[in-house]
Length: 96
View 1 (cartoon, rainbow, N blue to C red):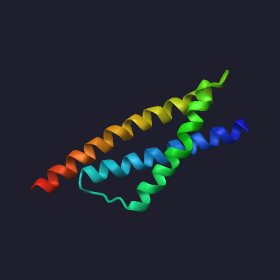
View 2 (view 1 turned 180 degrees about the vertical axis):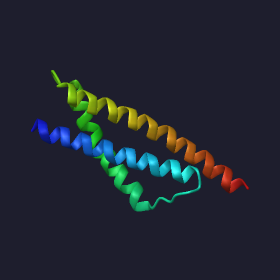
View 3 (view 1 turned 30 degrees about the vertical axis):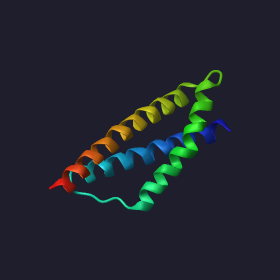
């Protein structure tokens, strides 16, 4: 079960990193994002976030799982910042 948890966190982190790259390219005007892309990331966040909360409240966690949770939190915070940037860029583009 612990290996499955590690795999899910690794996969979620990989997916968030890729999404962050795509958001950066979108903000720079060099990329695109579809509604399906947003839905997939939103679904991943909804599925993984409660699990992270459960894992972080649990007893002892091994170092790898702690690292995966810490990376997820960093990625999630970066995602929040990137989405705010996209909102600003989108607003600026629509204003012109």
